[in-house]
Length: 398
Image 1: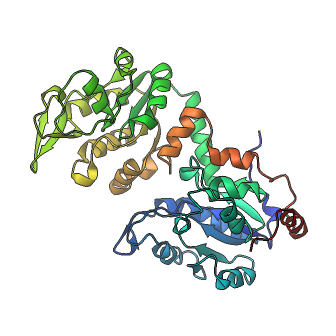
Image 2 (image 1 turned 120 degrees about the horizontal axis):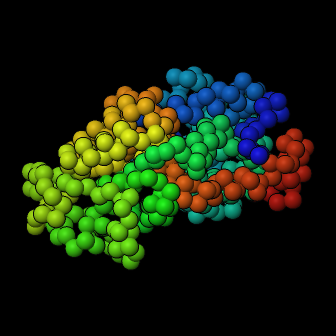
């Protein structure tokens, strides 16, 4: 089966547009978590060793100015000559790219600084593609989004999937034939994104535990008063049917918060003004027992609101899985943050860089970014002359 990997022997002197995900946590103008950077650095070095010229492109959320400049300063530790370009439409951008030598690395500013990225604007995709000979997608975690740098650029350049992206696909695809017993845990919020996966794994897994805010929807259907707890605006109509499934495990106790105080109680006893913030101790004990008897574990989404001081359930569960000896595949930003905090990353079989992308791939078996590369012009020779002929048919835009 074609894994859409690039051929390193053909990359010498070629300019590679490498789509990364450097949407990392920034505090005080510095990178707090470099998990996604470390996941991509081997690919950048691999391309350097192949003699390529590398242009890194990414987005970052609007935090502390929404700039990738702190990321550039972090990457300089591994790539001392890395150059950061703030305006990709400037003459300076064209000049710096044209003067690149083999092994040089340039990082472009946050793609979402320009509306064309999220709008999947064809002209913006053409502008990005005009800098390079080859496109490589190493941003698994955003490849469920139809943005210009994910689905637009592959229409214009020979395109490939990077090694870290392929590693994601390998481990997540293995879930199709898991070791038994197979235990799945879904947490976090955004029930609408997790419902297809919940339905799928209630059929194929041995047990499915639901925590975080998505458990609140089930409590609502059961008729519980939930105070000010987060619930979906529109409760899915088929939750009543799912509640009848004996494989479904809901929290038997929860931690709530009200006016700065916390309470441990049965979810049906939530009071006025209280918010459910984490799973309780009895729940963790029951779920730990399930972990102990499982040979394969899949976990996506936190069990509580760690950013508000309710991360104990997530951390306790992370430690249990890490020490279980089972095949363990986990993902989701808050789960990864907990694992990093506990310094137990290496104890898991695989930690996915994606949250939403992980859910989408597990639900549908593909991603729009992956399909874009599959349907791309990667079969076209990526010589300078072939590139020139290819773009001459599209017209001049840069």
